Image: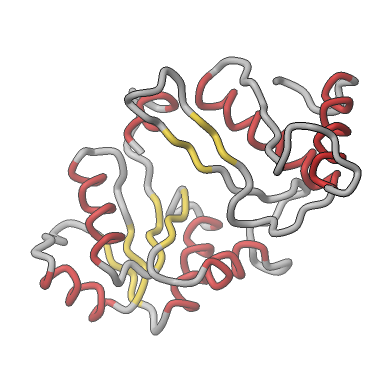
Length: 205
């Protein structure tokens, strides 16, 4: 998180995410440590009694950290989306709840956060032993994307890379083999995506 924050907003106020259902030590400690480093100002959204119990057991000080009480995890996800839509939070951070439950209110046609663009997921990995960051997509949202979905996923990742890194990325499309194999659809899609990029249908990479 610090790597991304230093890249995209080194001189701005801390981001204010709604942390959804932080009822486990890892989530709570991550939010607490990021707050202590002045990277974020978290809003904890979930059952307050459970959050405070985890904090007490893990010796985490929640003084001056806002808690929005909800009945359960699904209500926490819905409340988090509401906080973002009303401008009270700037982002969402997933806690201890299933991905589908977390994403449900986000992608809802009524009251969600959908746009006309495809939603996709990106892992950003920074290894001190490697000279550049790795952006890996999509590992969480689009389970079996077709060719056009893959095009959108790549473009999203490229746009994100430009936003954070400010330069042109290289894109590698991964499949079980590096050769075009008619029996493996992923390799056919990879070949098609390469041609699409050459023709300007994927831009910025």
